[in-house]
Every structure is written in C-alpha cells, then in structure tokens.
Length: 86
Image (cartoon, rainbow, N blue to C red):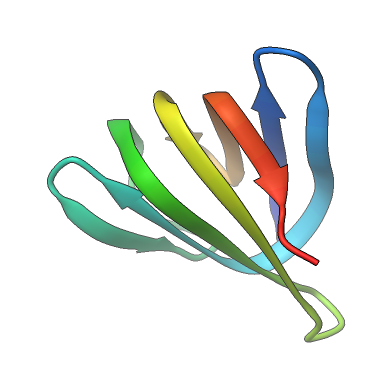
C-alpha cells in the first residue's frame, strides 16, 4: 500500500498524491518515510522535500517553517513556505 502524501503551505496545497518514499529535512536531520513507518511528529528545517511517486517519477519541493506528521500510511507536511522545484 503506498503512502498518501499531502504537502501544503500557509497559502495553498502544493502537492497531493501517492508515493513510495518521502524524504524531508527536520531540525534533527533528514528522515525518510516508506509505507509502514512508525508514527512521527517532527519540526521541519529549511530544505527539500523529495517525493518518489508510485510510478517512479520524482517531485521535489523547497519547504520551511512547519512540521510533518506520519500516521498509518498518511504523511502530512505543513510548511509556512513551500513550492515545487521545476
């Protein structure tokens, strides 16, 4: 079962979809999430969020000032500022 991912900024939804891997930078270091990961609540550090979609394609976004929450196979990343990188 893939991860359900929601990446939002204070202004809008940045990206939402299914993924096999999400890597984000937290104040304690970089962390990767795959389906079945233990629940986590962490503070985001300024940096990239890298998402590998179920078809293998990759999405990258800059994010800062927020938090991420992993529960079950759902991960929510809420950032004060976030934008996709072309």
